[in-house]
Image (cartoon, rainbow over all chains, first blue to last red; front, side, top):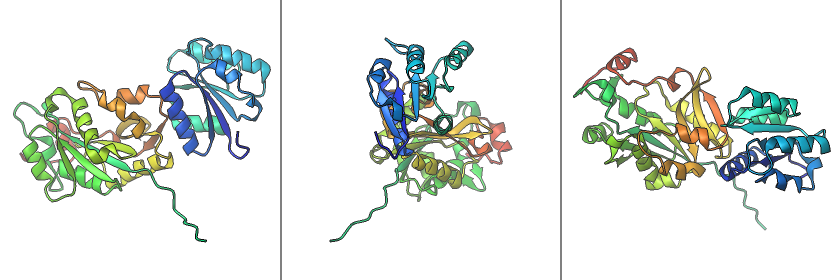
Length: 119
Length: 211
């Protein structure tokens, strides 16, 4: 992981989104770290240097909420932003109550994403 | 020892100008809205000239309905015309035809422009292309008016396959909503939402029906 660039971990089972968001963040000068599942993110051993974790909610296997729970307990200082295509107020409330900094609605607006990273 | 210094290559953008539709809301056997004149210039030509002034690498105009007259209205300007034989099947076929043009295939991004938007200028399009370049050619760019979604849009190369799979009378909106590619919204004013679908729209926008 680069010491010069802000690094953003992206967790999503959607390969196209993972690639697109990574490409965009790279173009914006960040270091994207893509993970296809919550499980694979948890095996990553350099979480301390992350600027932000961006995670989808609805994923097979470990859900985004489960990942949020685990990461909040192990790394309480990590900034976490959730994202979802679902339009449901209760999901927003649950994400924020669970410790997420924000919930981004898909399709993600570049401005919103940048604001979250720059926090 | 010499060191070659090269500026980073900016993403290239091709324009696909959609001018193939039947304009059914103009009335049966009616005059063609894209041949209506704004400041004595046929609308389709005015749109193509705006596209040519935008800094795009290529302008491909997709024609279909009354293609001979539309092509004639474009005479003398350096655009590539692409004839969509399936234009009656809906917008998807025109998008596919435009995206299939050889030089469009090699561009980093494609600006999709509807030819019936008389308010669009070269400056509007250049602003969108600049936003696309600023994203490294990796984002979707969408024009807005007061925050509301409008047109044109720019799709990055990564979404070309999704466009080629479109069917029926579907535009690119579905791709934008489902692709997951980050969207950059660019406010360009009323031009983003001003299109002319009816005779009334056209006259209100300052056009004059001719043919």
